[in-house]
Length: 217
Image (cartoon, rainbow, N blue to C red; front, side):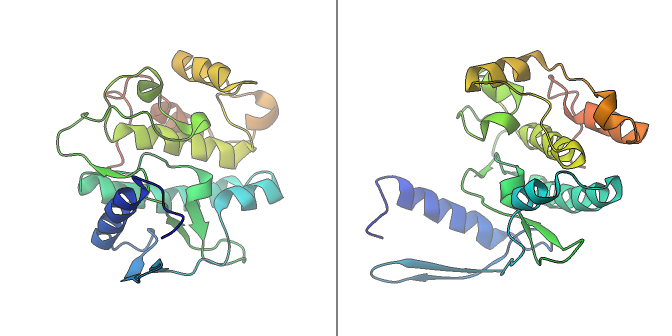
């Protein structure tokens, strides 16, 4: 507790409150919380495989069938929280954990530090998330809702398939410019063996207008 700065404790308690509501096989479960004089102890599932980004960096990219399996698990998790009016707001490979070091491990969505209840649709305005995965409506300073998770989910799928991201730049401003444009290219060198349905699915997620972007359901 000594290392908690002002405001962090309230955010931690909000995250704990959200996690205590969630029980899904593809979401990291919070089993217990101990509030001791010097520290909080949070007891969660053990995920010895680390995070998806570390695994992705080690292998370069995943076969399309494995991407499909992981994507389905994460999509089910996103649908579950959206059905409960919770928006994650930071979907990215670092926040997807692996249950083991084996091939094709179970995956779980984690880190609900930015998550928030959506009491009124598209009522969020806080600039949050991770630059390469953040949705254009956030970058543009517009109010937003649950569809920001679907944009980020599209970036995750793209990254798993080819090992790089669709919107890139040397600086954060360049990345933001690329996101605002919404323009991306399926470079034949990397995408020629990937099924057309997969490309169409990604294209239906990386849509500038959130009203036209696929929902988790």
